Length: 268
DNA sequence: CTGGGGACGGGGCCC
DNA sequence: TGGGCCCCGTCCCCA
Image 1 (cartoon, rainbow, N blue to C red):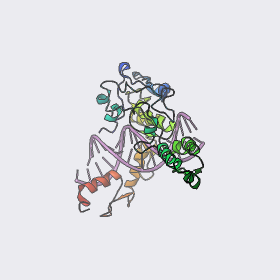
Image 2: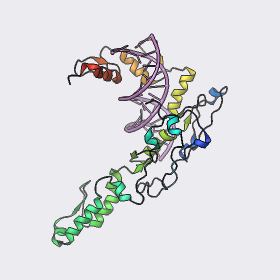
Image 3: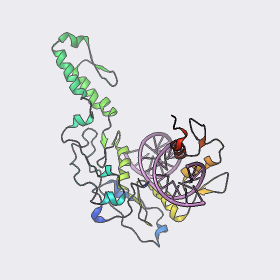
Image 4: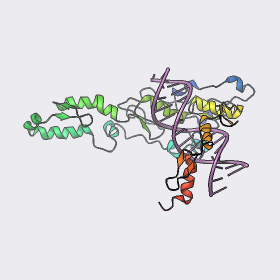
């Protein structure tokens, strides 16, 4: 899989995703850098239509997503197949979605209530207890309200991405994730698109040659702080990643993985 | 084959 | 709540 599997290199108005809102603020870094370069088309995708992300009814209040990524975009741009696999949940079934696989707590409580109604003494002897926070309520409705407003709403992931299967506990986290689909930050030099401004900033350094991160031990400089960090490992006698079997250390986890796959740990 | 560099992605934290 | 930043991690390429 290409490492830049979410990067769109070319944009075509006829192929732009059907997004909205989030990309109203396409990021432009250092415009003077681009004066001598052609200006690529900045996509204005549409995402996050209003009301689509109610914490309670994420999918059910939104129109089904019938026009996902445009034809050909997936294979051309290297989108993972999951991005094109739009699978909205069954319509008008909020409770089943929210509890994904397990039975609904409300139905559970209803069953309990039914059994208790057949035995009034049981109601007095037992209170309705929240299975998440152990709070007890004297009535089923009290427990149901508590769970709807507090425990269930907080414990479940309520914000679903309409481009993939991921779910998030907050709208902010979902918006952040959706940017990985919409890629609003476009390099005006080469047209590459990124999910976040600082990713674009780092990418632009590949054009400008700027390397602001210097190694204190040698004269090397890096455009990426992570790469400097990895480089610093090469100056260390004992490196960060150690093989559990031969105790050899490596500067990068990928090197440790390679080492393990190459046979050191075959016996294990 | 190994080690290292380059480029980049995503989650989390802080302001 | 959103943006910036950090950290961790991955993948590819090359010497």
